[in-house]
Structures are given as structure tokens and as C-alpha cells.
Length: 223
Image 1 (spheres, rainbow, N blue to C red):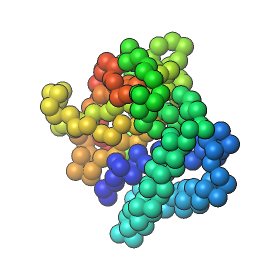
Image 2: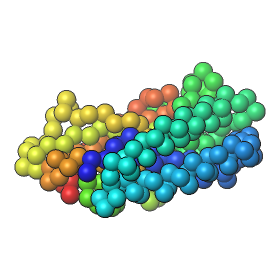
Image 3: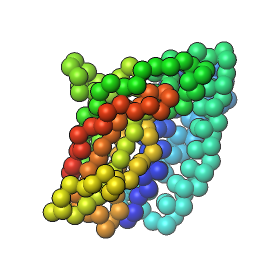
């Protein structure tokens, strides 16, 4: 069974962004029809995605179904975010930017400082070929907060996978993953990577894409 990191990231994103849009519909100037359409997409997604990730129901049909839904749901979400971003009647808050994973042009929103500290990372749950990661603010008293730190818009991620007995990877062995706008997310691995050791490095980014210092590499065995 091979899972897609793209779909895992999207699953995390929509299960954060759609409830947020519902709760902030008036502030974000979202009409009821668009909210209902998003809710319908999310309900369908939350039926089909568990079938896709479960070894018992991961079939050609469940893979087809989730990718077909993604091909419609992803552009819908992208369009909603673009509409919110370009609506001059909406004043975006830090929570809006981070929760909806909206890229903000510096010329429109002003400059915020480059993040001054590195995040910390931990594995909070491990299932077959999936590790749930919590990237947190290590500064007291914020260690358990799931919200992004102030002035942080995204988390940049780099991942390397090596043999379980191999030395720690060199910088060129890391592959960049898509940045995310949330602190809890899944990393998914291929069946042939089971038993190998993964290394994750993260950085905080501001809305201009300026990165703060990198985290210490988190390493764990892929089970």
C-alpha cells in the first residue's frame, strides 16, 4: 500500500480550513451557497479518505475515488482562498492566514519579521507507514499550543530517509516537502521504506517566505 503525501497534507488542510471558514463565514464574506458546497466536499472527503488510508480498504477503486475527488475539491479550496485574499472588504488576521494557508504578498499586507527561533518536532502517533508530527513552539509557556506562533505563516519541511544503521544524512540528501500552514500533520511513507530511519527538519516562515533557523533533526524508525 502506497499513500500520497500530497493527499495527506490536503486532508489535514481541509479538516482545518473548512470548519474555520464555517465559523468565520461572516468575517470572510463567504456566501451560504459556497459554504454548503464546501461542507458537501468535506463530507464526501471524510468518507473516502479513511477508505483510501486503511490497509483493509485500500483498493484501486478507493485510490481512484480519492484522486477524483481531489481533482475537484482542491481547485474549489484554492479558489475560495484566492477570493478571500483578493476581497478588499476582508481584513485578514494572523489566524486567517495560518489556518487557511493563504500566501500573503508583502506589498499588500506589510512586512513582518523573519522568525527568530527554530521549532521543535515530535512524533505524537505512529501507524503503519504514517507518522503524525507535531511541530511546536518550544518557548515556555507555548510548548503545547497548536496555533502558529505570532508572525509565523507556514512551516517549511525537509525529509530524508536512510537505512536504520546508516549515519545521519547530509544536507543534500534531504528532499523538500510542501510547506504547511498547520502544526499537526501526517508524514506518509512507501512500503519499501518500512524499517528505515526518517529525519525531519523544519523552519518557521513568515508571510513573505522568509525562513527562521532550522530545527534539530527529528529522527524515527518508519514502522
